[in-house]
Amino acid sequence: MATTTPSQPTSSDTIPLPSIADPLPRPTPDSTPSSTVSSDNEHARMGRASLPSRPKLSSRHASSTNIVPLTHPSVETRHEAYPPDDARAMSPRRSSEETAKIGQETRVAVQEHARVLQSGLSALAERIETVKADHDKLEKQNVALQDYIGGLTRSMSSTSIKAKK
Image (cartoon, rainbow, N blue to C red):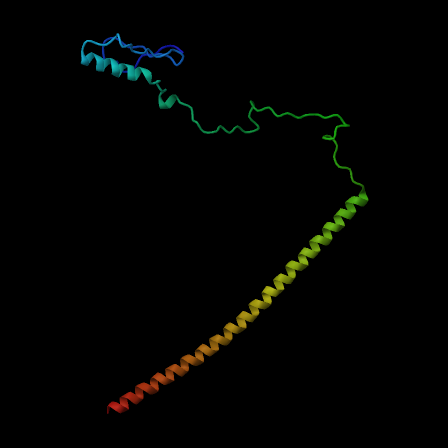
């Protein structure tokens, strides 16, 4: 990397910034400045010089993962060819009897699973009907209780009116 200059120099001369490969100059005890003002300026310059400069935001690349589709020209897919006697090239060979047996076992398992699901569904339907019947019964009892309470309050109010007279 080449050395760069700061974007806003503080004096007429520019101070080159060292690259990452260049070591930073260290002040020696013998090289003390004569005045404190110049010491502060040099210290500020050394502080700025020790920080690496960052590129402007518009020129920086995103740090997120770049996702490249498989159809992109830079993506190479490998289609490996294996010799016929290689185990990776062989597909499992099954006879028609084996495939029929596997198909029949699968069919029986699916039918058994369907029976279990159907019995669960019918049990749920029966439970729903029971709950509906109980709900209707409770609704009728609720109406009867409301009528009874209404009759009691009417009789209490008519009794209290007669007692006041």
